[in-house]
Length: 340
Image 1: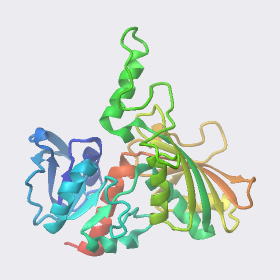
Image 2: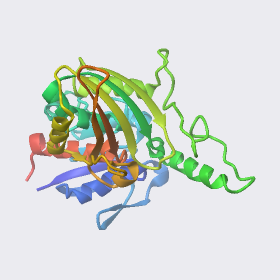
Image 3: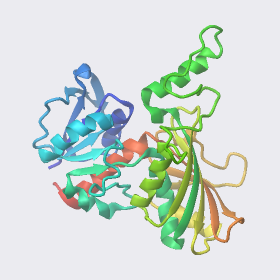
Image 4: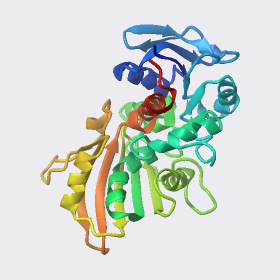
């Protein structure tokens, strides 16, 4: 006997990826229901070799369903997640709404799987920010070995992190560059994204950090270790899919770059591509559609006593969102719900 699963927000980028990944990983589901807003009722989405017609999330009865994967944004989640939870369905939410609630677990399965037991507090589990998810996967095995004290990270985040509107804006601006009179003014982003980089993701806070940068700090502490000091600079780049990060870490104990490379090669969810030759590293183009978090450019930082530099790349629609949510569902099924 398998699970009864709901995917809410099935017509969006992340929702479609959730359906793809459920099928690819052969998640043991007896039934999968696609939900969307009223305007998308009847829209067809793919689930493996099946086609599902979207149902209206408004008024949907979650009773009898085991797991709901939410990719509908914070405003809608605030309405429908409590309803699903009250009807006995465990919600795995991709929005930022519940990430910082101390009663709700924030989970990356390779990093803090034991936290899944706390789903009972509110029947809700939070999925982390895309940039945080891939980083903590890379940090966890190194932290276990040498205790990370401080992280300095600069991100290079693709436009798909801003949804379909972000991808469309990059595409249309790029085309407009070559056709006089068809230039496209910024709407989704603060400045032109085509052939440019923008050092702002989300709004500015009083500290001078953006909210995206604050998220990386707060989430890393909640998922990995509250004692780690984190500072981040988050940048939007003209890449369609795939987030990249330059990560500098300082550890309590010395960790040789060769040992770090070996540790990462053996770590779950990580693929090391690190040859010191032209092209011997991963880029966003190679990571699209892959489950792994790629780590490259592993090297000593000689400016501090115990320092390392890493380059980390991942498909943000997968590990940064849909894949992590499905992995949480797998974890929940294996450890807690246990059907069949």
